[in-house]
Amino acid sequence: MQTLQDNIANKVAMQARSSSKQILKQIICGNVLQRKLRNAAAKDDKHDKISFLVLLYKNLRMGINEIPGSSERNITIPLYQWIFQEMKYNSDGVKFLMDCRADLLDHTNKNRKSIQIEIPTIEKSLKSVLKDYFTEDNLTVQVVTKDASGYLKEKLVKGEAVHAYRGNHDVEQRIGHNRRCFILTHKGLPEEPLAILHTQLTNKVTGNIHDIIDKNPDQTEVVDKISVAIFYSVSVTNRGLSGFQFGEHIIKKAAGLLQQEFPHLRQFFTLSPIPGFRTWLLNELRKGNDSRYSNLIKRIQNQLDGYGLSIHDFKALEQCRSENGIANEKLTQYQVFTETLLPLCASYLVLERNKGRAINPVANFHIGNGACVHQLNWLADLTSTGINSSFGIMVNYEYKLEELQHHRQQYRTKNQIGISDSIHQHLGDYRAHQLCYIASAYKSKL
Picture 1 (cartoon, rainbow, N blue to C red):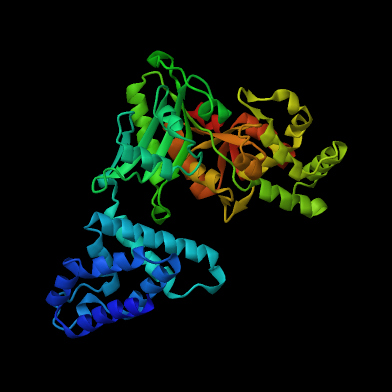
Picture 2: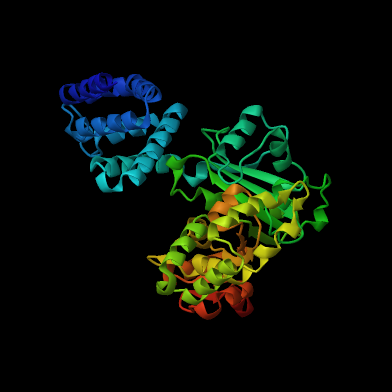
């Protein structure tokens, strides 16, 4: 593989240095290089693909205007970036570029201490090319219906990043009555979902994911009774598209489409996971008296000791699910932990920051969009993922469409998060008014 990579990159480099721009353009626009690039990458693993991109970068760093005979003296972009730009005119080329950026991002995350200096530059180049391609004017949000192609339904299954599909029944349920599945596509890739948004249509706030994905919805839709939309899963399907605000775009467009379809629909909430809360709490328990939340930490440790439990015993909650939902009689001993875990979870979401931003990635995403932290839900996700990430706790964020701009600005300029009265109560003695504010107070001023 390395010999093939060397031959391709060296051949193009020689052409670039010794030929006119017209000859080089024929090579690239004729898809010779593009085809070799994609074929070489398709047959190899991520490591070799990254090595190939680095080799391409090292050999083709000269600008287009530096090529002998070039008349494009004002075009100073590196030749490797020009090659990437040529590839975006082909749908397969675009997919290849997305996959390359995804691989580079994964590689960077796993090798932060020993990253090759060329990789950030290549990633930045790929992001620039992809951003030029995925402009808002070329994006469309649409509803997936039951008569959608099998290919598109398969893409939904593969692209779901929050609540995995368990079979065809789940597919039909999530696009059926009292549900909506929205996809974000590009006009050049009409059956390639870039983002997927799953929605429940109801008349109240839903606080348990099993009520959505484990129970069959009513088979009739009463338009006049639908007043609340619950966004319970939003997924960007390719890591190579991270940082493009596709999640924000699909939520806003979907809200508009839903209001057109349901005239009484006025409230929009999420039902969101809380990845990282369990890991954070274990670290706080290890700190003990040194924890910022030492009073709550002492209380939860006393509760565990009193019941003869350890924090790891919460995994048993997964066994408390039944075909009819939660087997409440088995959960009595865990109910007492709401007094400590919910305040700690509220503190984690609202008060724990990194450079002013919420350390929880899901919270940062929704709050950055202008949503407010509305409600914590106990025993809301009793899957292994839910227990292992947050002891089964989930959170509702509220999207108040007419207030999004205000709440977004408060977060971006003052690092303040809008919260509900119930979240404010959970924070208790740990309320930090410089970091949060009661969202309803803003509405009263309108």
